[in-house]
Image (tube, rainbow, N blue to C red; front, side):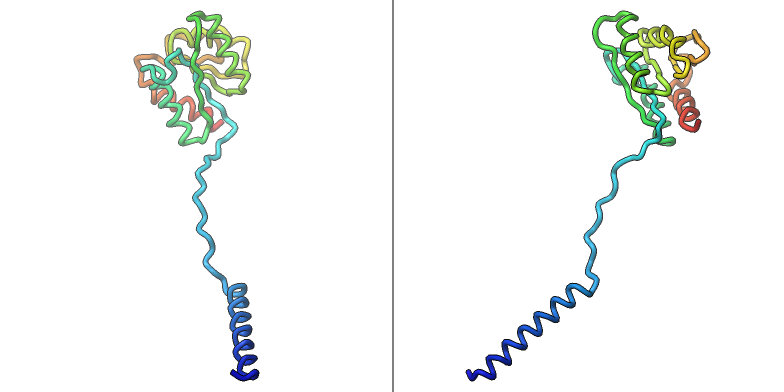
Length: 166
């Protein structure tokens, strides 16, 4: 091969490479596929449930928890639960109830007799927190009682929906 031909082939190769680089930079390519956002944005409303040692597996707690989740789906209120562990005394349960107040729960619900007694015991000392107990009678102005014979899930959902809209 003569020199002129070698230079011509080399020049053509460099030119084709330059065209490929320019096209790769200037021609819009396919953007990488974005992953769907799976994070759920919550409001600043926190609704907490105090349960017995069974957590939300207990029959009464499951109905209350279901109502809380229904309302959370509609209002994006944050919902959580805390089981009372240890001795089955009101004093022990009160420490767990106070923990939920310290967590800045705007509403605290109780499922079961012991958690309900604990909420009634701390309600007057925490007037800015709304308490909901499944059982008979309210003991303070910030305590709402839901009759256990009623549609507990629906009643709780309505109460939490109202809190989420406030």
